Length: 338
Length: 219
Ligand SMILES: Nc1ncnc2c1ncn2[C@@H]1O[C@H](COP(=O)(O)OP(=O)(O)OP(=O)(O)O)[C@@H](O)[C@H]1O
Ligand SMILES: [Mg+2]
Image 1 (cartoon, each protein chain N blue to C red):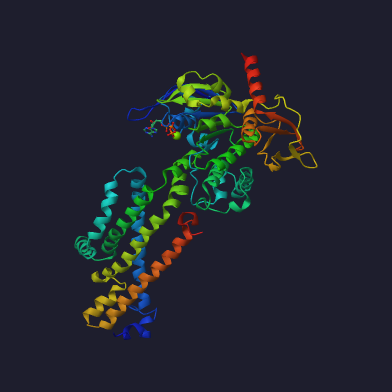
Image 2 (image 1 turned 135 degrees about the horizontal axis):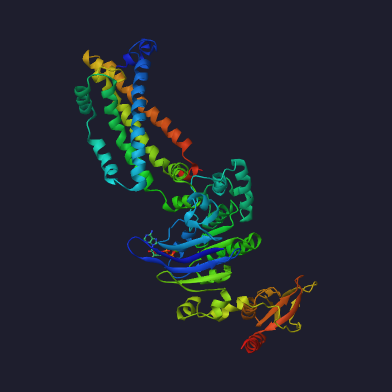
């Protein structure tokens, strides 16, 4: 657990970057700091590994004040992913990843073997190992940055806008990998972003900052979407927060209809398209009980006939959902929770 | 052009005093000593100034001062103060070496990508490790080009050693002029020019070896 205890940071020149911040980052969870530019997210993050020293207040990791600890040793035990990766241009990808293990006294061979395994973990094949950072795309560099931070297997990871330098498609892929990795590894992660969508998607807990380094609200994504503390938070989480909130509702208890003959199936019962005016139109996708209501809504909207198709584990169609079924379900749910 | 002196086999006998190999060795000795002393002085100062930003004006003005200082004049001054010998020559040549190395060390440190340096600290490198494992390798191309230009200048200028009675390839010119043997003067000029070209080629090769392909972008 990482604890901010009434932390203030005033930079020389007098601007207050962080104003009496008290919060706790739970062990094994991802906590995302989000807020407008200049609100003190990076400053807060960097106080955890002593890259910035608080003007007053304390930062503790598992009850230990970081201020008393040797800076270099502390930092070797905390993974740090900086914006735009910050890879060492003169070292190969492999040696970039091996940096911290080498600092902590591992032999070159041990460090490189471990590094190779990590590259694979972040989805980079062996052929990248011998390349230099300048020979990688922005997305690949960011993966290497993540692998480098993971290399010493630190219990705590700091990530400053780790996915900002890539296009939305690549970012989507990196998000998926991040969630998969974090499910395996269960690190205590502090992540900074200014993208509320990213925060909601990746964070177990989200801390929203406002200008002047003041914590506006902290809670699970669902809590922030359902009960924003004030107008600033409501505005920040967005006007479409109702739709976004559907991401957290499972499609498991959504009632479905029987299949109709209009749905074209292959010999294994898998849906192939809709029979419309004598022709066959594409489905646009299917969902399973593991998906969210947001996914179902999306499918119903893009479907040529306004119907989302559910499939079972084998991929065989086993139910249909119409626009108004969704509306009824949401209305019923509101009735229950009110 | 009379190349008879240059191609006279007797002048290539390494054991003879005043032969090409003999003079060349002495010449290279002055060059190496001046480069060594100059680097030992200028590199740390340049790195320090570049690293901290303190005293930048020294580094910036060093380049101009170095170019405008007449080495021969300085040498004569040193001889007047210290008498004949190796020391005044080394001082004059070292003063020539310092500005390009100082300026390039400063420039190399100033142009470092601050994000990468920040990452190095954030990984838990100690200041000395940040310098030797990250900053120097990244600054190496700029640093080394300063060293190269210092080496070229000092190779050409080390001929002044002969003006105060020492050895080196300058002997060919000074002695040749004294006895109106222009073939010898020409031979001296050609050997110095060749030496400069060869040295630069050698240093270029060394640079290729020691600069990481990731920095030089020569993959
Ligand atoms: N080294 C510094 N010296 C002086 N002021 C600084 C320094 N670093 C940051 N600040 C100021 O502190 C405030 C908070 O900066 P910080 O970098 O923490 O913001 P941020 O929330 O990470 O912003 P962004 O989303 O743009 O990265 C800003 O007003 C900034 O100008
Ligand atoms: Mg920031």
